[in-house]
Image 1 (cartoon, rainbow, N blue to C red):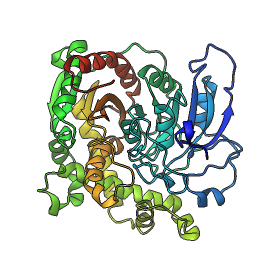
Image 2: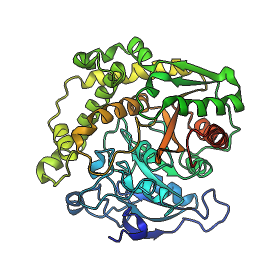
Image 3: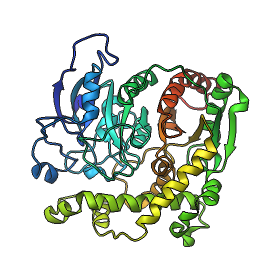
Length: 434
């Protein structure tokens, strides 16, 4: 595999032409790449691991999401590297190499859709497809300084996509600018060009911003000033999401870590939400892939091997409670946001970690990250990660979430908001190089 100018992002380069040569199609003239978790007819779907590739035949058909993009007029230029079995948010792959983060070459690119983020960040494609179960589009988007969209759960077909955990699996996408992000979303979500609706409220989750190592007042100020300028100050609200979850999601009690309740590095109710999500994820992963893992005993990289085997050993204890948690949390968040409300949180709790960092030193970071990532994961709401330039020469982002099914509102909002965000960043001199 030639790294060179490809940043080590591609598993395989090939060209799939759009289904029509018409120039009137919404994605005409654009190129894209797909994560090696999507079926493409005639190619083996490798799932990030050579043992998987070795034990599976070439796909007979192409994933529905990929076909939709080809019908939309875009040209596919290859398949991208991913973390093994989609079981990491780091982006490191011991078999195929770690794609180089174009924004911060000494840092991880984020995973598991690592190569898909890197091809966009490195200007090797106009956009790309990834998947997001626990954070696999949102994290690499943030780390690589680009836009990443996780849609409402279940609104885009996952047919022809290797499942990780069906309760949370989504098809997501990356772009360098909000206009292309929106165009791709309209094709995948089959949306008409509806008139943009402004948010009825923008709720800033103050406690979530306290989890971030990046000065939260800076990021919040950029967002507040931009929203005030476009929609008026009356739209801005503040909330402590951890308190809402504690009060409105009683099923979480059995997941609360009583021993860590006093630790300052996390929000206990969101840490419990994350625990519930990861238990159900492990259980579903086992049902999907446990037999293959136990039979083949694949060669897996550090961190991923431990997670995969922990999943294979998972029992169904408390799995039924996870479904109660999902329903209660979705209702609580729906109530908080109202009809057209939007929630603002950090995408991740800080800058991308350095390459080959000892996993044990990342435990606090991972715990905080999954507290933030589980909000969209458990609710099934849509989320967009928006790049805000650099802080200390490392990429910074913020995320906006909207209710299930309001993907179009969120896509339009980002496109409307982004120029003003860039302007506010410049005015305040808080962050650099948007």
